[in-house]
Length: 256
Image 1 (cartoon, rainbow, N blue to C red):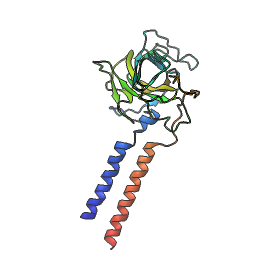
Image 2: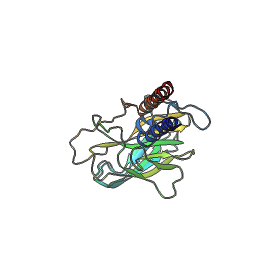
Image 3: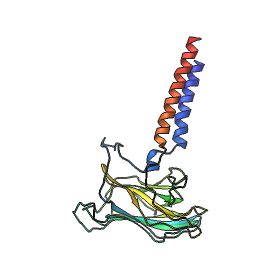
């Protein structure tokens, strides 16, 4: 009985620790493809240009600064479904530089291209614009929402309130919110988002202008490639390892 309880303890500890310390894969690659919604439908990514936009009120930040962001669409409609037309989804910011603790306003909207003038879901983060950085897939800074916000919510993927996501399904035409820079600048940054037109249709890698750090000499670049290390795979492998250890201990106990 003691051995069995110990095995259960190892299993539960492994699952719990990964739940606390290993970020969900969506927090890393921002890809909901293959996930099921509440009605059992799978999500599929789109290859046409994105109809959703995010704008911010500053493209620079300082430690603990705050940036306002707006997610929005317009009422203009264009039913042409072409990959060659400009993206109908935008992220705009009210500043392209930041300092420590500075605040930038973010505005996310759709201009109606492809006939898409609203969105129903969003996952948005600020990332480092340095593709060689070891933490390029980790969100930077924190987000703040307007009082009474009933569509968006802040989420904690790596750090507290480092991500903006949706908490309800509704036709949203635009949204404004704020991003606050960390206490120390992190070099050039950019906003990266995945925005869903509906539960089964979404666009990845919707990005903003670069948010420059005046004290950095790094040339900014947009990093949207999937990470080489998949936290979901790490979680799965660790679970298999725990199961293997459980079987080994069980057999050893009963063969003695």
